[in-house]
Image 1 (spheres, helix red, strand yellow):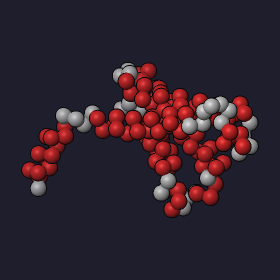
Image 2: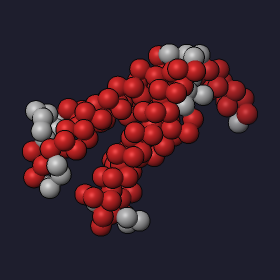
Image 3: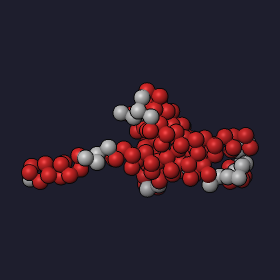
Image 4: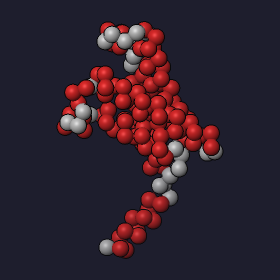
Length: 134
């Protein structure tokens, strides 16, 4: 069994740098698409929900920007890239907390929450906020 484990490790060790990129690209692209789907500005779905136009525009632009900097931060291998990644993660966490508290209040600690894509966006944003590029 240990021999099989070693063989598998040898196969994947040359591409293990791709693992965080799979998550980073998935999160970044998803967030950019969520934000872009709110265009043209102002996003009528948010304005119709009772959100002021300035805030609705800010949310849509923040979603696009957060997704972009999660990806862009990973391309920079110094402390600036690390800070950008953490900033992007923080933005995603904040956006998702507000989404849960405003639009999905009935989801807290229910099966519906854990079956939604939103919980994974929140958790992955938290991962990058805590971990940065490390």
